[in-house]
Image (cartoon, rainbow, N blue to C red):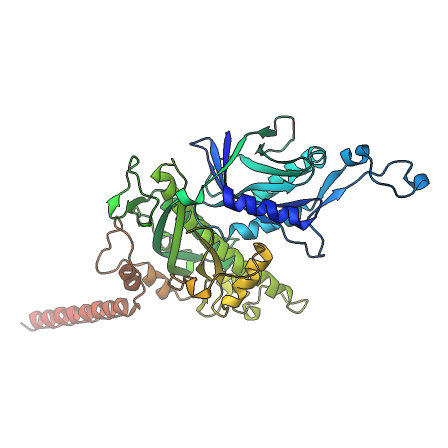
Length: 493
């Protein structure tokens, strides 16, 4: 249960000044920060105002209940009773969609932890149910990875009277008097005390394509979604090496500098090998690449939390990229000629490939995943975005303007592109599928971190397997010939 909230003083005061200068009577936005159940407190890094919706209307506005005698008296200044009866009209769906897209841009240890409301005291009190519903929608759209925390924050910035208050919102299916609880709120220097952890994580997933009767969810989207979920389970049991030393619970780290993290993966089952044993496989999806992950640890949190945040960041980053290519696929399929069916693999372009039914594809194909780029944000922290192979940094400027209300992007020379390109290869022949599942001639120790060398070794062509098969065949023929000659000589004798 969150009992105290500490906000970054500089960012929150800047947000307050910006809101007062806007001259709007109501505003809504997202709270970016971190909830720490172990400490019973939360940290707020920044407030991000929700942009206008598709109809160019503000997502939050003030509703006023007119007095009964307005028509007879004409327009007059609002009375105190009219002011007290005002409430908020909030576009919950739009705020939730904004939260979903912003959450993709946050690194480990940074999350959408609630909403802020800029409104009068009376309007806020008269809209408790609507605000609670909005927080629940935001929590659904931007969940915190593998976290059982059922609470979010509501920060109210009141201009009449002028003050800050914070409430802990309990998520659930019904609203009651205990759904919104006040908590202590203060400002301080939060960002300067954050500890930074960085991990370059190389991965390779080999996912089976089953025959039509074996699985109903056999699109590339389904296969990748299941594969990422399976990989999340494997990663959950991983240990970490920090700055060359095995992770220790009691170990402390300086907030200065970036601490290097390497993951030690446990032994895992090979899905393709298992599928081959059941003779249900008709192909394979080989998904490999590199992820640059960051996590930010708040003061007094244990180092194990930083490792959990990195694991969550890796999986959420993969899911975000899958969502991006699936969104493009939906748009591409929606633009096809009416009457065409997705059953025909010929209509799928590179963009719409995620919706393709894999066992209907007639030839091997591939797809490049969006790459993560890192942009300097608050203090020494980064925020991220994703670029398709054909996109440039100009796209980042549009994203930041629309989602974060940042008109000018930082110097593009400071934008980092640390990742190796992630790709998806779909094979259709049984030989390619089984060959990709065979262990290499030199066993790989999976108790150590996966390195770039391991990725290159796993990406070698399957020519060696073909050579081995041919050699075995020639040896069998030679042995048979020798046996035949010896048998013939014994019969003659």
